Image (cartoon, rainbow, N blue to C red; front, top):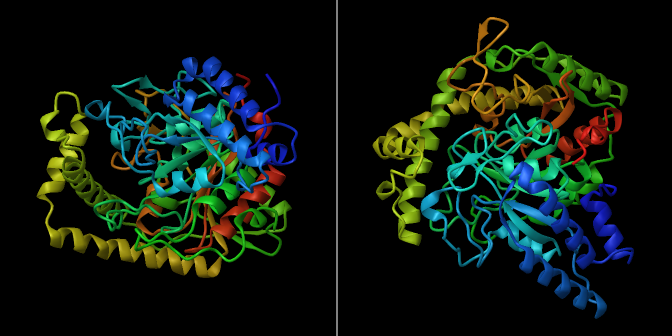
Amino acid sequence: MKEYKSAVRIAKDIAEGRTTPSEVIESTLSRIEKVNPKINAFITILEEESRESAQILESRMERGEFIGPSAGVPIAVKDLFAFKKGIIHTFGSVPFSNYVPDRDAPLVERLEKAGAIVVGKTNTPEFGHKGITHNEIIGRTANPFDIEVTPGGSSGGSAAAVASGMVPWAQGSDHAGSIRVPACMCNLYGHFPSVGRVPHAMYPDAFKYHLPYAASGPLTRTVEDAAMMLDVISGPHPEDPDSLPMFEGDYISSVGKGVEGMKIGYDPTFLDKPIEDEVVQKIEDALDGLQEAGAEIVYTEIEFSEWNELHEVLMIGLEIVYAETAHNLKIITGIDLMEHQDSVSSIIIGRIKSGRLRGALEYRLANNLRTEFYVSLSRLLESVDALAIPTMAVPPHPDAEIPTEIGGVPIPAKHGTSLAWPFNLTGNPVASVPSGLTKRGLPTGIQIVGPRFRDDIVLSVAGALEETRPWVQNYPKW
């Protein structure tokens, strides 16, 4: 295997003439051809399109045009709402196996404007409805660290593509942990941005993702790569009323700022959930790394305990989102999911039906408990610069063997093994950062939670972790 190069390194090599976009794309497609049959990360591979894009870029570069910071860098995007005009977009759902959107998602448009080349769409569970990556179109995606275990979901295809070295970076989306869970399970950096940082432009409902919040963000091997992607895809958009103004400065410069003098809170009781001992050990070793880098680690405890009730708030929102999505897709595409119940997951059909029965007052009152959690978290983050908690309570597991207890202590069935979903109710920037491998060689992860709108702080803390507890040496050779 050739040396694995980061997205930042590839962009620099192309800009300085050490390689060309066509050479990079040919190497990428060759690797995908070799590895993807074993991992099954891609649902669509854009061979002709990516070669043509590389040739166009080279012609423009020969004319002396400035392309952008990511010129020639291959990227994969998730086959959920990262539309690419003219390319089949399935949502992981059989009824949409031949659906072709007539517009680009804002993030795809921005990536391509910056010179990145989309080489494929990555696998996702149907409409992103579960934490493992399997659908009835192409089957399951495997974890590159052990093909018998899940890469997580719902951005499991994107995570597996990066972790196996098929692409240097990929886009994921997160509605209840769907960037951070697969990042944790595949030893990646996964960044859930501040809500509004990366625009949605969801037609016909631009206010769709208010409960719970959803966001698109990077899945990468290095923190610097994630920062470069955020610099490209963030910023206001006229079709997204919640999109934020541009960040003053650039995110990539935040990565190396360090944590000297920072106070990092650590809440080992978060969600009142049992955590496997090995996961705890890896988290605490990562915190030792932050301490070595100059941060102060303080034990904290969020003043909130109604986790099961809060999860019901999440589900109220998700069910209404599924019902609305089905309604709007019928308008836009003419495809009615309720007429395809024989080929659509019963979980999705159930959520659509439940969502249709939820009342407007029930939907609005759900925000009361959500507000309590938001205020508690905000108050905590006034006393510390960032919060650290595990991403998952357990290491990766086989698809059908989701743990139900740890050390004889039951895991709350409603929200399972993930500690990621609560922040989809607050909109804080959160990243899952690799925290080491278990004795079996399986990844663990630590979440870094920043104050609202402070993605730069999250990147700084993650950069310090990468410096003191590097993880790039841990990827399997494929």
